[in-house]
Image (cartoon, rainbow over all chains, first blue to last red; front, side):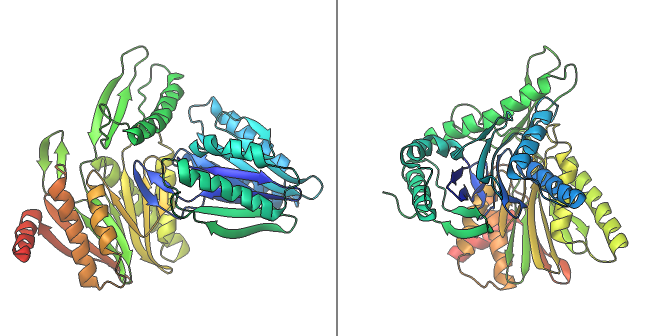
Length: 200
Length: 271
């Protein structure tokens, strides 16, 4: 019922997540932020089982920050993604696996932008675009059709809006707003929340 | 209903996953929590625990969250309103249960789910809050107190704890309200209702809070009315409405009103 999406451009990564924190059939909170800042240029988007999401994401966040304190430099997005996946994998066959689905988005000085897809079975894939949740079924084909590696920021934003409009049109559950952030060489930028209006 | 089947598949996903997880440890009493729909498309707020002893058949014990508790922030602090009925199946075990736990003079916790779980863990929280005060020479914030509770119960996730509580207080950032439960949820917000009667309470408070700037009197009336309406419709809520107000000086017990008296009062007002 939650939704995450990421789109990688030539020199940026655009990510969005819905804002609903649901419990059974009630929206307990309508402005929940599902993005966790791992460092200035790395964001972790996390959805899944209640409790596991925040606990796992904060665990990774604090460990990334600890690495920086100990070694004087930050982990690259690739290293952070692999570290996250390793933790998921280690816990997978324990008595307390983390049932979380993740998108990690970051910008590296040498490698450029990167988007990493991870799921609760600790799969890891670097992808130009990705989505999690029931909404992914509806939007991945749109991304397949219209994505190009040389998207500008505005074009990527339009593509994101297309996806969200499709959710608004076809998805059975109402997701009233989405947080949007953009990562590029200058860091993480908060963009305006996307609020789809009206039903077509 | 299409919606119920979507939700059914979503919740069954998690609870089946939990069962697989515990399947690796054989011979131990394992219990997991899942919100499952019971019997076709009827959704009930039953938490079920399953005992699987090795190859034994799954037996389900149902603990019903028969209660309505609510809390909301407003201009002058936080209003906390709860009912007082305890049920064992369809038998009313008590009509005078205290569902608000006084953690310390400026923090309150509400009780929904297992009474023992709620009062034990919140008492433990009270102890931790006191330790924090002694160590740091200042009051603990509501955010920190709720995080302590959430982290404590997260360690027991999947082992059968049943607790849905709201931590309400006033700290140096103003009024604070957090929902914490035994599944590991911890959410900050302006309004929460927890329990089998929560839906009915949401309806009243949502529509009542639309007009901004409530006075303390109006806010208390809204909380009381919401619990009353929930007890009217929900068989598992009833007894008395206990109302608390949290403000900058701490919490005050505002009133205790019998639901049947409220019924007569509201009926008379209608006439």
